[in-house]
Amino acid sequence: MNAPVQHVSHDTGDGQVYKSPSLAVDGVLIFEGKVLLVKRKRDPFAGKWALPGGFVEYWETTENAVARELLEETALRAKAVALIGVYSAPNRDPRKHVISVAYLLSDYKGVPKGSDDAKEARWWPLDGLPKLAFDHAKILRDGLQILREERRK
Image (cartoon, rainbow, N blue to C red; front, top):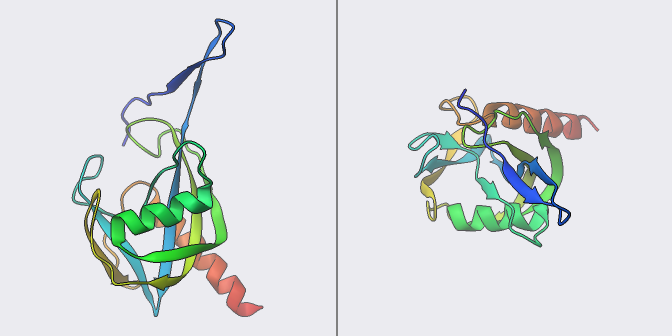
C-alpha cells in the first residue's frame, strides 16, 4: 500500500494544470451483530474483503453513489442514514489519491449476492472479521462508535 500516489490532472482553461484526488464512497451496513462485506474481484486487494463502495460518478451525490454501489456490488437496496466520516489520507488507495465519504446504511432490502466488481457479498460477525482492504477497518470502527453513541442517547 506504499505505492507512489498518482493524481488526476485538470486544465483550468487558462493554461494552468493542477492535480486533484478522486472521490469515492464506502458503506457500512450492520444488522444483528453482523456487517456486510464484499470480496474484491479486482486489484487493488483482489480476493480481500472490503466494505461495499466505489467511485462517485459525475453529477452524482455521495448519498446516491453509496446506494448505487451497494446495489451494484451486493444486490441490496439501502439508504444512507448517517455520515461516518471523510477519509483522505493520500496513500489510502495504492492506485492514486482517493478521498472516501463513508456512510452508515440502514433499511436494507434483498439478499446479498456478489456482483459487478465484487466476487462475493456476505454478512460477517463483528467478532470474527477477516483483515479488511484499504482503511476499511478504521471506517468500520468509526461507524460502530457512532452506533454505540446513538444507543446511549
